[in-house]
Length: 160
Image (cartoon, helix red, strand yellow):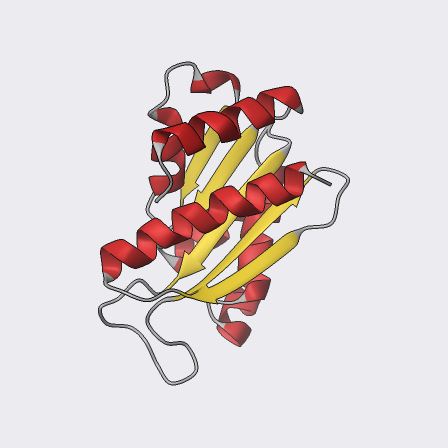
């Protein structure tokens, strides 16, 4: 996971770009929002966070099509993109980041191993960005690496 100084820098970058941020988190369970809101004064940037651990929550809160989840699975590029775009549509934020993955220790398969994470970052009037990775380590390490990757993806979206 990124340090407090990384969270402070990301918040400052969002302020400089005059953007508000929303998060849509599955396998991280709110860790991205928690890392940012641990910083005093973050409320001028962090607009809201969605913890959508179940498929039903992804469908109900973010509008991810049930058919999409049935077709490609919750841990996929398409669902990560739909989560970020849904969070953006259902908030007053300018940027939304999403994460969905398999943090383990169980739940993996040959095609979707433990550590597989898909992230997306949507910004109003810009193309949605996607990143995937298979992070090594235990559940905690995978979740922490996912937070760091989310910060990087937000930073990349701010740079466009």
